Length: 196
Length: 189
Image (cartoon, rainbow over all chains, first blue to last red):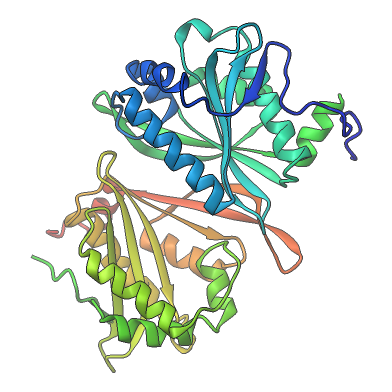
């Protein structure tokens, strides 16, 4: 089905309560450094060992990220900001895009516990999917989630994602093994849903 | 103790950059082989580029997260393929990439023999908890070989590969340490 609900005037980077912005090298490192000191956040977001990062380390990582964006051309990154005061509340990205196959991997995180359960994640995912399908013209997007991240799984299901793979016992945390789930959403599925 | 580097049909070797580059420049011309390997567009690069690339890897030395082996036939000492293990030391998961560039030995059990050595190395030398791999749905021969080695199908990502004018699924497989141990029939590993 052809997508008709967006046109060229649609503001891709504006949501109801949030917007997608670029990295602010002055302010953001402090904020993201704070997030990395919350091990719950890091472990929900990533499978790498959780470790706190100083603002200088975060800044270095931003520089590396922007270099990769420029060179690899298969990565898109957004700082999620609250419209009310422009503060950084999270990040959303699409990476490892294979252009010949039209597939990309999405990541999304709301950094501070105070900003969760307010619908920011859902708005960010909606904007990220619109960007993936209506601007990048991807055929599908893929998301990887540990089985213990119930909030993320519920959000993906709400947006029509299908659980496609269960990688048994792929993670070890807190002394036990956990499955790693892979979810996928096709452009047609997204378009039909956005229409409904 | 078992010999880690010798199977029933092949032995595992490390090759010098000139040798690897020379054979790779020959293998890469086979686009069917390249399309079985991964979902990146098949392409060809120069022997010089390949030699530089293999040399860089030699200079970097051994990485604790990547293990690469070449495979030679026991019968003729012919270089036929390779496998790589990418290792996550924290979660003890290894990803396998495996390929046989010499197509005249396809379908003769060499891949199965290589995979047997690969799993033995991953579980009894690297002490992994699981081994993972991905393949495309247009490679049923690989699927059968991996199933024979003990891998289980854990899911498919729908239509994530577009080739020859149509959409294909990637298949994702895994084998757990306990499953591999059970297959050894109580034999000492």
